Image (tube, rainbow, N blue to C red):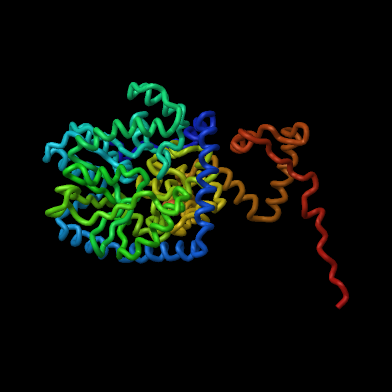
Length: 473
Ligand code: SF4
């Protein structure tokens, strides 16, 4: 299982994404609509900024007292008849869940969308253990049929135009070609209904887990999570350690910001509060409830004062929609389950900066991500910090190190700065054609790969500038 993927080749992935006309058209259509929906939904609430501050404060409080709230959550879930499993990493989480499936003779599993189970590569492990696993969120079902991974935190199939999904359904399900999204949804619903009825185990993520009551909160729009948790006899919920909230009352803050930030909805269609397994006399709900609480690099992140704020993330996807790099590159270019600005922080933190050394550089640092983040994560600050670490540890690209080294050398003394200007003006006499430079030599060639370079002024500013004369007092 690829817990430690080979180095993510971001540049090659982005170049491929930019050449993909279908992807560019699709992202160009989907992203502006998502951004507008979020902005409109946020503007409706005069208290939006205070909600963001309250959410950030609650999350920081949780992170400062994490072990105590996790202990409380464990006690409450156990008191309600659930079983709590602790997984230190992805491999351990997979073993826990596959052992559960094997020991109970589970052959058919339905899943509702969960980025945490994507993070631990759960599906292939379950399939190797002999179980069939079917994703039941429509977008996630499509990416599963296509043999892909989600490209967005809340819209897993945002990269795929409807026409491609129509073709996929014809090929994989043998149905006539439907063009309208509602017809495609109907086809998926018919297939998935049989899966819900036959499944012995349902696997979900967890949006929030309430320490005070042991309640697991799942937010969704399609009702598939509700069926996944209510119908099969075993429910396995998988959450990162950071998903815990102290009290049920805290939930109201997060429910108000999550849907508005993610999809621009005032509220998600379904909010399920699951408190314990099925009780005597109840007609639905699982006979067995298992909660898998995953570390997988999170405690390491918690111990990092510069990056621990990333654990506030509620996976709304707003920073992805807003990021100019994500808008063009799409989620798959990031080579990891977490894409966009939050992915550029989480992937190096979870998988190691060496594997994901280019990701922190995939940002213009325009701060749009920080402006929309509902829990006020300083994503640009974290990206700069990760860049600094990449430079300090020799992981930054050689070309960048050469350029920054040269810049540092020439800007450290006025004489060298003047010399650099003179050399530059000399060089551009050879390189400029028609008032612009079309091609620069290495290590500057990246600049002119997609645009022309500006010319240096023939007379530098300091020669033209006259200091103001002192006037009479
Ligand atoms: S970092 Fe903020 S904006 Fe991005 S997904 Fe997480 S909560 Fe949403």
